[in-house]
Image (cartoon, rainbow, N blue to C red):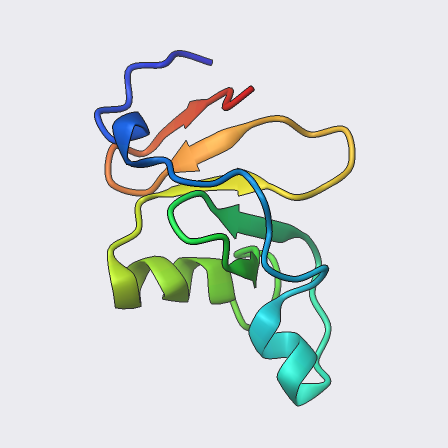
Length: 88
């Protein structure tokens, strides 16, 4: 995974605000996998989940950098550059 993303300098946090998808927890819905916004820490569900809250968060805020919240996964993704990177 290359570090050729132009937005890595925007990373402010690696920590998640919640243990699960913030919106799904509020509505009692479920998710497949979790993603964490590395700008603000918002936790959202992945695009394989029916609600796709992580992508919706990007569309609403423009925060381009997420990372996987799944155990054992260390990859990150930039929505703008459409590139994977390793945030560790």
